[in-house]
Amino acid sequence: MENNNNYSMLFPCPSSSTSVVGSSHNGYSGLNNDHQFEKRVEDARDGILSQINVSDNKKKGEKKARKPRYAFQTRSQVDILDDGYRWRKYGQKAVKNNKFPRSYYRCTHHGCNVKKQVQRLTKDEGVVVTTYEGVHTHPIEKTTDNFEHILNQMQIYTPF
DNA sequence: CGCTTTTGACCAGCGC
DNA sequence: GCGCTGGTCAAAAGCG
Image 1 (spheres, rainbow, N blue to C red):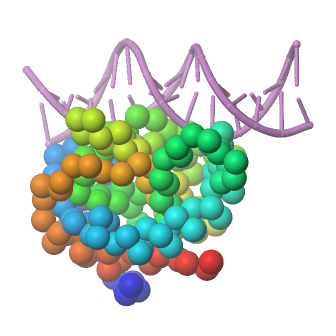
Image 2 (tube, chains in turn green, brown, purple; image 1 turned 90 degrees about the vertical axis):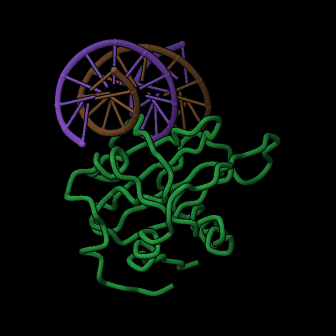
């Protein structure tokens, strides 16, 4: 992963968080290929979940099939990190530990019930924690061009 | 006209 | 048993 501090012109969106997912959807094709990346992210999820964990089953002694959760921290000015899929915001809640509200997004796919939640750190506004829930079973219909740029501006922290 | 976003309320689960 | 936090859904408004 390359740590590029340049992320100013990467996002074509002006400043609103609505136009990104609504009118112009960018594309990519990396997440599915970055299994190793997800693995690390999965590990990091545990640590992050300690803060945002709610009612989900624990890691041990679970009988039911838990949905894969991938959490990663991203350095971005914008909360909305377009990964190529269409996301519909279905809720927003504020967490006590964070002064910033957490946004809940859901994939608007037909049968694709992938959920995504974005949370910012109170300490560092520039750090955005994105947690993906579920796996996309639908191919991406867009180009990787934009996501490649986004990846460059993404600094994945793997302290574990 | 369609789609997405927004805010509030409700429900569920867990803790004490 | 009650309270609290977190999560989800619902209805309405705005924008493209």
